[in-house]
Image 1 (tube, rainbow, N blue to C red):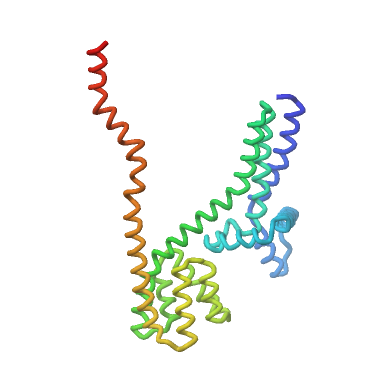
Image 2 (cartoon, rainbow, N blue to C red; image 1 turned 90 degrees about the vertical axis):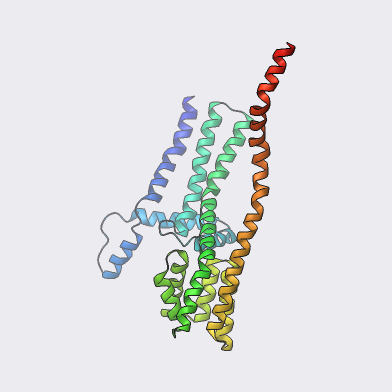
Length: 291
C-alpha cells in the first residue's frame, strides 16, 4: 500500500478509535449528578462526559426528527436497555458508519474498481443501520413474549379480582408473581400511577410502549370500563377468553403454514439427494452396459 494511502487510512482510523473508546467508557454522568446534588465535587476529569454529551446532542440534531422519534419508540418496545440509551445509540451510529467508510476505503485503496466502491457504500449503509436492526429485532421478540404471556396474566388478574382485590392490586399481584417483560411493564405502569400520573394516561402510555394490537385492545377495554363504570371482572373474563382464542388461532395458522414452508427445502434439497441415491447405481449400470 502506498504511504499516502496508508496515512489517509490511519488519519481516519485513529480518531475513530478514540471516539469509540470515548463512547464505550463508563458512564459517569449519573455519578457526577449525584455528587453535584450532594454538594461535593466530582473526582477525575470531567471533560469526557461533557464531550460525550455534546457529541450526542450534535448527532441528535443532525438526525431527522421523525427518525429519532421512531428510534425512541423502538427502544421503548425493547424495554429501554440501560446500556443503550437513546443518546448513546444516536451517537454510536455515525461512528459505525465512519468505521464502515474506513474499511471500505481500505478495500478500495488496495485495488481501485467500481465494484470496490459499491462494497464501501454497502459497508457504510450496513454499519449505520445495524443498531436499528438489532433494536427492532429485540423489540419484536419482546412484543411476542408479551403477547404470549398476556392470556395467563389476565387469568391471574381475573382470579385476584374475583377474590376481592381491586384492579391495580390485581395488576401488582400479577407483576409480583410473573416474570418477563409483561411483569416489568405492569410494575412500571403501577409506578407511574404512584408518582401521580392519571390512571388513563398510565394505561395509554403502557399500550404505547408495547405497541401490540392485543394489548391495545385490552387497555382500550379497561379504559372504557373505568370511564363508564363497567364491572372490571366481566371485562377481564371476556378479554382473557378472547386472548386465548387469538392465541389458538395463531397456533393453527402457523401449523397450516408448515407444509408450504417445507415444500421448498423438500424439492430443492431432499428430492435431488434421494434421486441420486436411488437412480445413481442404475444409471451407472446402464452406462457400463452400453459403453
